[in-house]
Image 1 (cartoon, rainbow, N blue to C red):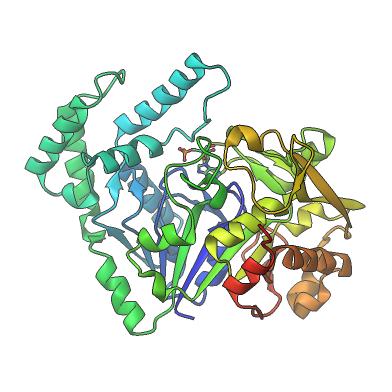
Image 2: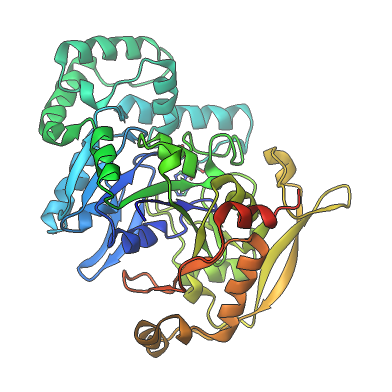
Length: 446
Ligand code: IMP
């Protein structure tokens, strides 16, 4: 397969960094195409845990090129720190390239992000989005207003200064902006240090496609945080979908060979917004504790709950998944029964399996209808060792039933299963046997 995309299928934090790293073993290029420092992709390496924010996981493998693509918004000072930290740990193995078209997140965007969220809270208590405060929304807004600054412009001091002045003029309301002279100097300096990595990346990718070299697009954020198709306004400001990943890397849609949706065997959400299957009781707390559910970027505790097949079917249709990766199945180990949401009961008493309400306030009012699945034993070290040796045949039969249920309900085959944080704790069930579009559509009766 030449071009594959791996994408979050829920609200983020599905352990897609780990799955991307697993798939990167077969890739020549790994491309990030959206988001920026709001991302935290955690990967358990033999050398220790690494969390990547603005660099793709291709950097961890010799012979692989890690591209931070045109659709990203990049905070150059944080990026430089991330690269230096990788070097310090001896983990900068693949080449890093940065798209000259990617937009720059400035300190003023971070201030503006915090200011906007506090303004929301002041106007209407409880309406803050709980962003990661990394400046994502303001940087994308400036990009679309066409006064953003791109990475390729950091090496043009006169142009950079002109752009900065215009940008500052657009933000009279944001308090405590840093002095423009100082910022211009620091940006030019960081720009010159990053310059050897800054390129037009799309011709490089097109060349790879022509040569048939395998490319992995590493999605960040997730389907339900999509600016249009997520739970607006409780979303991020990019398109974390297959279409968005292609657009954000300059790859034509006709070149995509596979789309892998990553979902936890349960679910989590960080930040505000509707979450029908949230469990605020003891069992939710159990998931948080056993699953180590804290934001990799912000350290905030994640809200926890159950797998929502209504939303997963929706994500499957939106993205055209060819297969699914179901992660963190070990976290559910030892539970007698596992609830799975198969439909919503709407306030008028009717039920819906397929189309989640498009308005966040309506989604907040649905009542999940649960099926109960039998649980599986805890994943002790010996059980993990057996899976490593024998592969998928060593997975507990009740877990296989759970995975089959997900496939039947979504119409998308489960191809990968994650059963621990470590790089090698992923098992392949076999290549997908059903064609993506037909399979995802079959499960869709709406
Ligand atoms: P922003 O992307 O920082 O603007 O945050 C908008 C919403 O998306 C907030 O609810 C964040 O918690 C959420 N979000 C953004 N990036 C991630 C991520 O990588 N994982 C999980 N949630 C995220």
